[in-house]
Image (cartoon, rainbow, N blue to C red; front, top):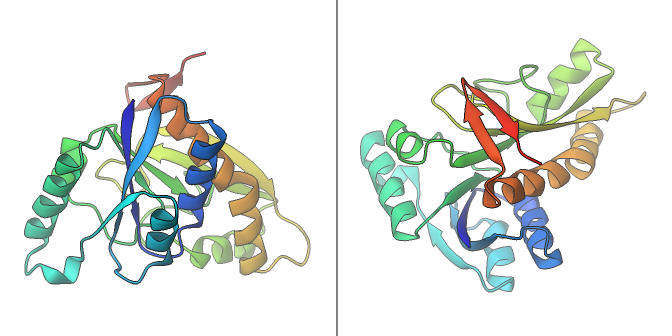
Length: 208
């Protein structure tokens, strides 16, 4: 049984999707053992507590140097025996030590079809604003491993979502969450926990 540690900063809707999937029995060989927040007031912490999941808080601003924060987060994840780290709306940049220590063991969900609308500065509503500005007919979400390039790690799963006439960034954001993010993030986590993802030459292969 793999220990899943989820990193959060806000409301925790993707965390809730993971909890719901776990409760349905969809994550067969893994269990969410801890939720770590960069924000002590994040509602995601309440979601964790309501489901009997251990919580912790680590704030970047409590450390003078980024390297100290990076080291402390790495140590905390090791203390929690994390086999898999999931970024579910975590708004703090991960450092080199965390990424190297947990290589191909950190999964992020991005609200677009990478390589579109991704990279530094592309998060939250901005992703959907840019998609609508460009006039794309299809957007979606991507579950991927994290490396040192922002949104540049190996892609695990993607799901497309149609853009509709009259969409605002807020409406599109909600549709992408409901139709894509909340489905493929738990699926990617389940695949990892069942050892069904192989990474080779920067690409993933999903085993049947």
